[in-house]
Image 1 (cartoon, each protein chain N blue to C red):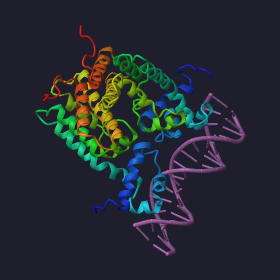
Image 2: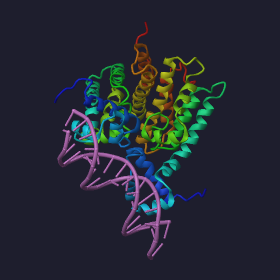
Image 3: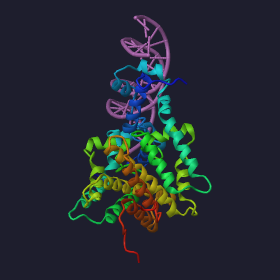
Image 4: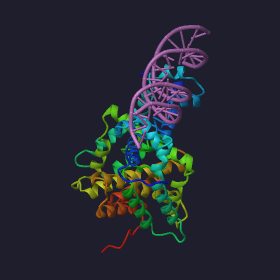
Length: 192
Length: 192
DNA sequence: GTCTATATGAAGATAGAC
DNA sequence: GTCTATCTTCATATAGAC
């Protein structure tokens, strides 16, 4: 696997594909759309990637692995504090802005497509179940865990939009506090 | 506009299209997919709808109007309690399950497609801005408002999944409480 | 590495018999 | 109202010159 500098054609293809997939969806984005935006041609694109699916794979692989690490940490026994898991999710979104807003939301054609090839259907369930511990997973607790993840996702999206692709530390705290509020933790973190 | 009984072909088309659009996205669902699932043919489908877009319109129109009503109520002066707006959003999701999970989330190809025709780009912004009142809309407040809406959406999705398409009253309260927790309201509602 | 040109299939949509 | 058959366009992907 050859790494490539940030100015390389391959990198540029991934950049515009990431953006277009995020806004129009995978199926809604054509190869022509991508090369049209780049100003190159299909022939060139297919020199760098063997298929459209391969582009998706390249885009998704890295954040997907990072998410797996977060999930596995969240599943440790005893469970880590919810603030740690939710904070890691916020940071994940900050590190991979724009593309994977719906990535661990369990919905969205992008996830569908990727999930079929990588057997990730239960990803959402795993992180929700981990967050719903240590209590027995009542419906209410599961719903709140999911709500907390939803709060992280949408809060981070808004923060990224308002601040040009970064999440300032103060806003990160705000998102985390919102997520913990949704989760229903009585004491989010000690106040100074 | 002719109304049609629940057993009618038109209704059946809308039912499977709603489901397929929700899982695979608008662009990811073909007319062949729809008629294949129905066991009918394209000719029949095109007797009932002039285009694929028209199917989307028919699916989206009703919940979209309901959402507009919620937004306008939320924008009233003085602002209604947040619990009222968020509760209305939960009820909306309960009334139109499965299809519009990403509808007011501001993301997703389905919204993109519909939004372009109906000028709804600012829908998300409006409801967030309304929820962020009456405080001046600081970034933190906006982020929390968005997080609250995200909590409603994902919480309701989970509830619908766990309970076969309905949101029981007790769970509705749980979602509302989670959303208010995300919003940061100190006193969600008076305890009995 | 990038281009032009093209193969091949599937998409949305229509015509017209029944 | 539903069918079969078909048109047209656009999709992914390839071949081969430069």
